[in-house]
Length: 289
Image 1 (cartoon, rainbow, N blue to C red):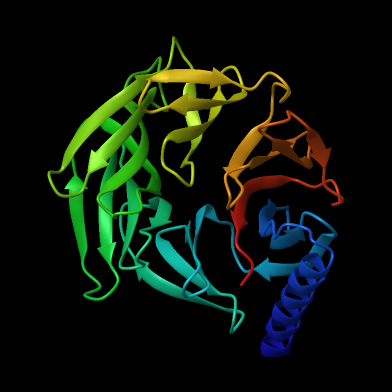
Image 2: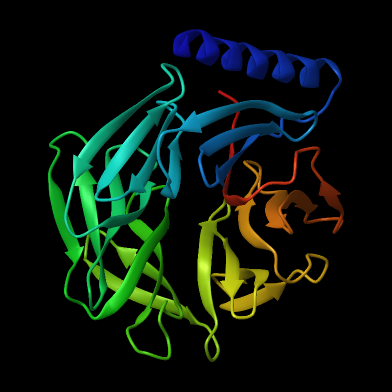
């Protein structure tokens, strides 16, 4: 049954792609929304043009979610393990167990590594899982910094982190950081004012801009890496969360008041997607398989 459901999903995605091509509509990809309820955890696949195309239940809550397009694999953390979810086979499998608890796994673009954090009593350290050797190595341990991986550079040499110094006043960290996997060095490229911190970070497709979801107060902004300055997005309402780039970098999807919206950068236009209101917590915007 699971293989049949997966085949149906792929057929739907191919048909919607074909319809878009015939109508001269750009292929905007698929938005994947993670929903966490009291009794269920779901991945909802959303075509921005037509709405929900499929909902797939997961067997556990996901702490972080990352997608590898060339193998159609999601990775997520739950409890003391990392898990894979395979779109093609519609199967979940445990990748490995580790202690302390892993968090925020992110695929490297080449699919050879997964960056993730381990949460200790006093800090959050950065680790790498090698897919081929199945070995776990430390990039930064006992650093007294929070370091949650968010994204990778396309050359697989830098990891984008949200990080910060551990203190009672600043629990989650207040830096945007680039970490070199070759040199094992960190470069704090932006410091948030006062008690603000990032909870979502992502490179733009050209890696010139970082999309930032900010807390305290909640906001969505951009950061120009070369100019080292923030770019405000005033049309996006406050208290919006979970921003994510479209594959072409022309739009941003985000969650506001349990609804999903897209924001077009060159026009400032905001569009609400035709999806049910729900307790969405994570968004990914992927190319159609």
